Image (cartoon, rainbow, N blue to C red; front, side, top):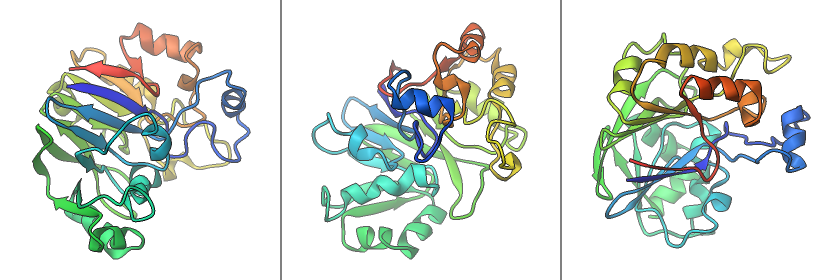
Length: 264
């Protein structure tokens, strides 16, 4: 199994529209690598899986031919499903592309436009449930606690080897966290924020995510290869030369970047 990081940022990417944070300014000057919304491409012996289809899909897929054999969606926040529009009639016009979703996510997609038309028009074929066999892989959707304004949220397990978990409210809210992460060889985990005071003027209790130092402390002794992803544009880990990046590397963790590849 070959995994390619198509995107490593929180939903709005780096640089973020309208943001004047120093990291955004550095990315605009190309002094730092730009980052697109979190997404993985998983290539098995017989097919390709796209884990999350966000707003940057056209850019992420620009150098690839053909289409994924299936799309897997984690939830209905903007960075994880809005790229489905590229499979519609104005884009690839796919004939029944399989999209693996939970029942709640299926209800969301079939209850709102333009997603409803993508399904009823035959561009997308929803495969509803928590266990799937597709593209030469066994895919499990694992419920995790995260803001549920529109749908539930899941982590994605592929062949019980790869775990993709870009969003979660907190590790304390998920008692199975240690067991599930430990059961996988590689885990891409939520690293949205480094600290609670990262976004001035905004109550981060309204947008909960586990802080990176807490993640590092909790999983330091886990044998799983942990790759931190879904970085907010304010997260100092966006700068590979930052002291924070050196700290997580010294603890044995990795920080995802667009274009990163992992073989499992």
